[in-house]
Image (cartoon, rainbow, N blue to C red; front, side, top):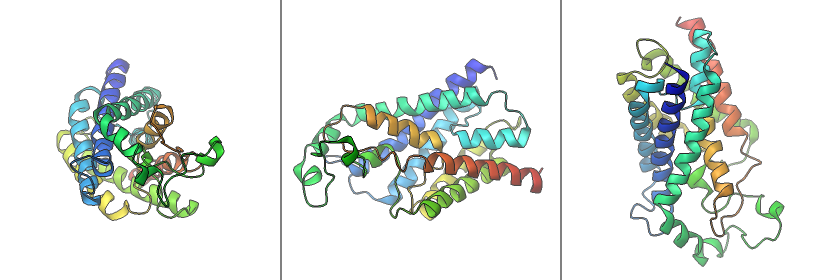
Length: 264
């Protein structure tokens, strides 16, 4: 695979991943969406199918890593880090593009949701009238969950551990069952298996933190949330943002090491 193929494949694939994954979050969350309040099972299934679809689209070009944790796990397995920066660049760009596409697809719903006084001005709602950035950054805004993850209970060690464990499961499944014949990305059957693994992780381990299990899945859309002209959007919760980046990277690295010790 050439560097250009890797970059293009990862950009397109990660954009599709975030478009469909963020799209199901928007569908379940936003006012005037036909799928509003569909629940956690819909979100878990939506993300699983998003991974599968994105992997099938980008696999022929880049091997469909779509996730820096996957790239790191495979690099540790193979000992080859030469294409890692190219993968990372395509993944973060694609994640940001996908988040913008979610905003475009649900533009009317975002406007209706964020101008509803029951949502942005009622008891317990995000204080979007605060004058200072610091005041707004104390908590997540009312639609941040469409773009990125957040914990139900803020406990740094637990939140970090949850992301490490979930990503470890994902990477160990990919490294043992999901790779193509060249061993550098997802295969045809592997994309299907990985989609189901993501659903399983969401249902079983997603409750505490929203299971980012992918640094760019969280960071790219969080940056877009901070930049988009959304009314009354509140803060982007940057104080938490490092956990869904660092946790998955650690989990992917551990899985790569365990694979080399136990399976190679």
